[in-house]
Image (cartoon, rainbow, N blue to C red; front, side, top):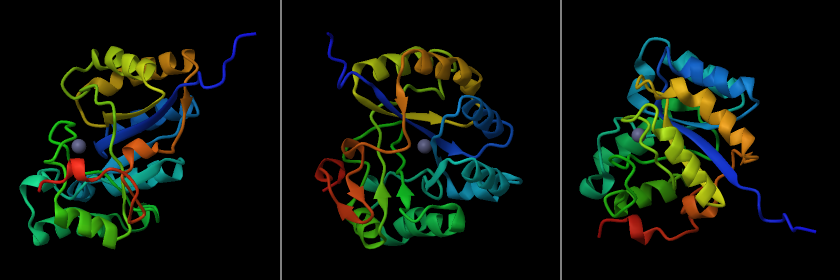
Length: 221
Ligand SMILES: [Zn+2]
């Protein structure tokens, strides 16, 4: 008898940089038609766009998790350890989400193209995240969907096959990449991957304000 325990691959799907009216609706439809749930990390200033707030509400009501992806998506915290700037990017962005955000205060910093290095955080950013009770959600797969609208699918699939638990970063923006989301999801399902809305410890160095992982490797000294 072949042991199958431990063979199941896990996938956590995340969509950053939305909501984008005209794109996010399509993403929601593709997920809903397959009974898949994800987490959406929203850029605060984009909430001011016409129809955006309603779209995030619809996303939440469909059972997806909502987190903050900074206010402006322009500040690498490791390069700008300025408390006033970071309070806007972290605290004000979360406040803007209001009741759209969940109590665990999911927060994802801008990685400047998906980079996980010491530019990601600063001592002040970590102070604000821990004092504010945030959950810092990082990632381990960035298939660059925003610059390769079809090639990302193969890269994502090989990441998923190479790891036990993949936290995949996609973007619900007008890049054309989300036209291939349905085909990608069908491949995920065909592979027998378990899709979950939980995040592995490896990608969550701060949980609800408590440092629980290796945070030093992301802090500019
Ligand atoms: Zn982003």
